Image 1 (cartoon, helix red, strand yellow):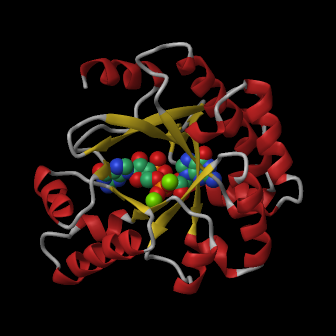
Image 2 (cartoon, protein in one colour; image 1 turned 90 degrees about the vertical axis):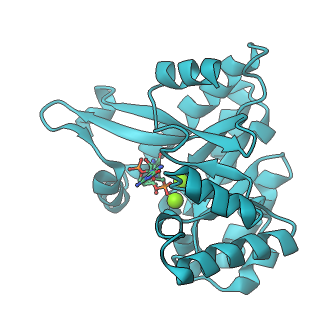
Length: 246
Ligand code: C2E
Ligand code: MG
Ligand code: MG
């Protein structure tokens, strides 16, 4: 709670790239710069933030910061095309005024809604799916895009896939990690790509760490990537520098 007031949170930007090396945008990843503990991983504090409800002001801050950044890039011809993917937690999405909040942030920052991609996780799709679908449609009617994060790791019915207004499936890094070693992971990765293609969705692989993984994915028809092989999550200045070199 104190850290929110003291502005101890910051965003890192991890590039999302295409097969020919073009940077299409980034995923924003929250970082907690703790006065004593140093940089704390979101995996360690997001669950606590969810439990305490602090994820709401925190999530708002992430969304506002990401949209303000997008609006600033719009002024720069070399960056105006970039998209930002923002992770949204279940707790946030369930708020009755979530749609209004996102739209208010879009309006106040003047950002093009089509540059914003909200990442939902499969685990959100267990309860109240109808409500989630309605909110997604409401936001999509304004141009906001959606990706399904950590795809394949959670409990979700494939029948939701055709009901949700999704733009992209994100192949989870747990499948990418051993894609060259474990035939099961290879089969799952290929199947996710095929599923995305047949549903008319985009697909992106996360956690790509080597050229060989990238090549395997490309051979399977996946041409969008995110991972250390291309770029680590970087502070804003580092990301902008990476863009200039890319
Ligand atoms: P995620 O959305 O699936 O994010 C991908 C995670 O994989 C990030 O960890 C990223 O740093 C890491 N990663 C990226 N490339 C590689 C790679 O090549 N190899 C490996 N081993 N890892 C890679 P991070 O930043 O620690 O975030 C962990 C999770 O915390 C995220 O998973 C997301 O679920 C959550 N999170 C992060 N930022 C936010 C946020 O602003 N709001 C919410 N609600 N959750 C967030
Ligand atoms: Mg994500
Ligand atoms: Mg993920």
